[in-house]
Image (cartoon, rainbow, N blue to C red):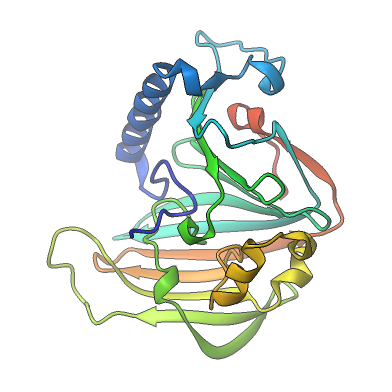
Length: 285
């Protein structure tokens, strides 16, 4: 069965105008589709997702979330560990950049990923909640956001970012280690035989990623992950919860996507509200 990539909804690693137009069309189409299904959607002013919002533009900011009705998601998630990263994609001299914040909790089994695309202004948020066995993914641009909630399924999770090809099942430990931002990491990699793009569609040729060797030392809430998730994680060679602290992906069209970690901050509590996806969020520099 085809794995569903952890960070869903849209491709954010595309360069300049085409990406802006394509992403905006996808968000608007998704928004229209979600609002038509009133029995399984809720808007920002419904119940726990209500948040006072002052809009000075001509459009009203709106967040609509659909998905499995039984999936319980929260309006606020607490974290106290933040990993600040940059992703840079380069192709034929053109480049695009994304700012990424990976969030963990030292006391609760919560994982979060926040992404800002500096090229087109799109924002993405993902939350994995082991307390309620649920997940929530959202995308927003220009004050219009849509999202999907559902049951948390580790078999459908992969530690890759929007626009990247899913490669988790192809990764194997190389035996190499390195310290990145003070965290001991192990290299996981794969190299395919395809060296040229013959189909017209770019495919992933190689991936070299560095994952935390002892995730529980960085993600303290890991010890509170309940069964059957704990056993599933023990059975996996590469944990889908271990976002790479460094990575380099090479595609058949020559695109190189590099991930680097700039800072890791611990013991700094912060509450992330789902409604924050609609407004600018000040990031660590």
